[in-house]
Amino acid sequence: LTSKRYNVQRGKFSAVSEHDLKFFQELLGSHRTVLGEEELEGHNTDWLRTVRGASSVLLKPKTTEEVSAILSYCDQHQLAVCPQGGNTGLVGGSVPVFDEVIVSTALMNQVESVDTWSGVVTCQAGCVLEALDQHVAQYGLMIPLDLGAKGSCHIGGNVSTNAGGLRLLRYGSLHGSVLGVEAVLASGEVVDCMSAMKKDNTGYDLKHLFIGSEGTLGLVTKVAINCPPRPAAVSLAFLGLQSFDNVLKTFKAAKDQLGEILSSCEFIDQSSMECVEGNLKIKSPLDEYPYYMLLETSGSNGDHDEEKLNNFLESTLGSGLVSDGTVATEPSKMANIWALRERIAEALILDGYTYKYDISLPLPHFYKLVEDMREHLGSNVVRCCGYGHVGDGNLHLNFTSRQYEKEILERIEPAVYEWTSQVNGSISAEHGLGFKKRNYIHYSKSLGAINLMKQMKKLMDPNGILNPYKVLPD
Ligand code: FAD
Ligand code: S2G
Ligand code: ZN
Image (cartoon, rainbow, N blue to C red; front, side, top):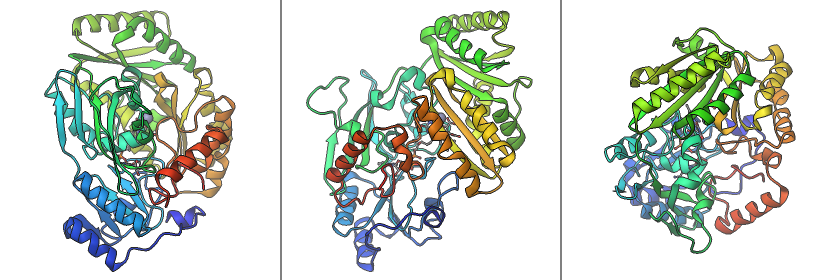
């Protein structure tokens, strides 16, 4: 149990009573009021299986009005709430720490409108990312976000964690592509910041408070997203390189030579590749190299893009920057290459316990952190690997051991955060702070900023019922 493994005290919240259950069942009906810890096993445990809460009540509202009624009731009765989307979060933010009531967006999965002129889709927070992307594809549009968890994560969870993902390099952050948010405050008040307009400079832009606040300021119930045209042509180059210096130079060359059609730039180190090939028994189309890169292009003219990409490959192979490479345009071939990158998280879990770090770093220091931490941990861990969104300066540094060991965690933390803050990096690039990283926020945010965040939390959730023990330190 999280509360056992980490020394955290339960807040002064009520425990759910028979009277409370009666209220929820009258509001939602018994099939949308799921009871009992065994029933809730999958909702109390995070995707990484590293934190586990003890909730015995899972509520499944369908509408904003039902969310409003739930939250105002919980606020009046001092019941803590854990908002939950697809439960793919990686920082322990999406599951209860104690017996918080879980409010799931699973049944809030309706698309409200797609404006084909402006490319704006309006939908409920519980739409699964992949399903939403498939929905807008019929209009020639795409959701400007892609991540390995697309089959399970909800768009409301993506907004709440300000998820980055594999295409941020091309389509930017959700702070740019989300045009509107509807959220419900702890009091039950509905904050309607929905808009389908690309420009709206009327007062404070409040929607940004809910983007990335991980369920601690309000429960997101609807979003409006600006969707770019779905590219007619996508190609994927998979490269083998001898040094990380060559990875950086190749990234720079890709930006110069591929320019506007470059839509993703990811890297994988040899240790990550060994893990995904060894644990998942999937094969890389290249021989063994110390580093690999995935460079994706997306454009409107396949011939033009493929020619550009092949010229790029020729010049980087010719100059020795790249040691080997292959270009795929056929969807199943591209999917096989993406699996080598997207399934590393899954492969790491098969080692046992994962110590996961999602760090933003200035590119010159980027892989040095992996080398230093690999040396620092030595044979104490089964594996130390680095991969991620090198195009965004976002490293995914992971260690694994057979089972959780406090001694390993203490060798890694706070060393990894100190190292990061010394080069002015971010201790959490895209996954958020959740439960696991909230006490390290000061490595990336000033005390003044943290104080203002606490004041905002106090103003918007005075009883602290929304996702307690998450994001901000006590
Ligand atoms: P959950 O995990 O259910 O919740 C995440 C947080 O948001 C929690 O704090 C929860 O309380 C809160 N929350 C959820 N829904 C709402 C809501 N409607 N209103 C208010 N708060 C809410 N993340 C990235 O950024 N980039 C990646 O490339 C990436 N790749 C991943 C690959 C894999 C294989 C996995 C398992 C995860 C990956 N993630 C990545 C992490 C995770 O998928 C994202 O954080 C995602 O946005 C979480 O969405 P979710 O619906 O699963 O949210
Ligand atoms: C990714 C999520 C998985 C991980 O794959 O891009 O954001 O292992 C990550 O960190
Ligand atoms: Zn990532």
